[in-house]
Length: 481
Image 1 (cartoon, rainbow, N blue to C red):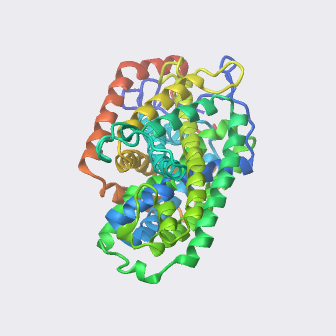
Image 2 (image 1 turned 90 degrees about the horizontal axis):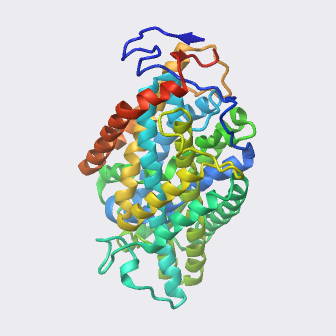
Image 3 (image 1 turned 120 degrees about the vertical axis):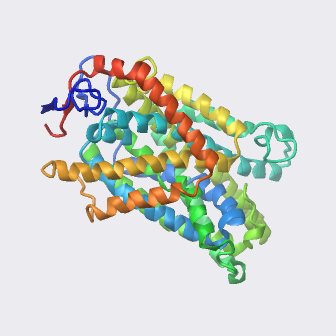
């Protein structure tokens, strides 16, 4: 059902920037990605995206410098904000089984220009999180090399400003490029490797919890909140990127065998599994050693070594390195599928989203994202990269939560594979939580975010507005119409 109401620039008609396009999936000229992912693989991709540097590395940095043992509260606050948005994502995934995640959802409900803003925003944020988790991995890689008696040159062990003599984080750069290579092997092959590594990572986290709980000293948990409640909230704004992996998962909708049934379940299952593991791991980390003694780069490995379990620390370091690869995998996959969707819709040149003729993956986008992530990983400290990605994802959460409320009241008749509970309270809580957490981010993070969005609006006005109307002509199309 088409709608040409308001045919001005700010209308929803063919010329309006708020038209609601939904390109058909069966375009004869458009190659399709292979549907190879089931519920188990989707859930593992979600878990793989969520558990990574956020717990293995960033939790230590936040515990030592921002929240103390109340880092547990930081994760719980971030998880509460995330679950509200997860319900909104799950409802959309049950209605709009398309690649593109929140970009596609916002375009279909709030309008083309809103979808563009989110898509442009998430291209940077997904790439930044690949860089952030790769930086987190390099600390554990350094721990392993030391245990093996291998000493790398100081200049390649970290970004400028992270240590004396540091010039570039070479390990983090190599992991970004390696993940790009893996993703270009094809979805089926790369998903199998990701599933194996995710199982290894879960086993390592369980090892941390089971063994670590036997070494917890309650005296280390005092004072519980040395930086006050404000420190716990500020910590939540930093660790937030550790709890939204399902966002990247939703970009794989067109590679799912039964997206409308499986995606909502996989999103909620992966988030629930990870929040339980996060809470237990935070107690272990700050209970084994006092928060002032937590190593921000190799938290758990250093903590186990401090209590005389260096062998366990080595196993954890191996698991952390392998496990963080899965986070890079999930978010680089998300970024490349997002770029594919935007190119298919005409908002970006089609060259970028072209699929490999044999493997049917967006190979050009993947290599470009891998290269940009490698540069960021080599030159930025982990907290700076994490905050850069958090502000963009929180902004996307605000728009997705608003969109699900708008659509529930605009089209209550649409069939939904999953319905967000507590409408409209739960989605609006997601909006409130996200705005609240954004307010704790640094001013320079806001400036970078604003500058990136401004560049995006210039690109939209100069290229995307006209180009997309050649690929997807017409006015608004209602979902289910």
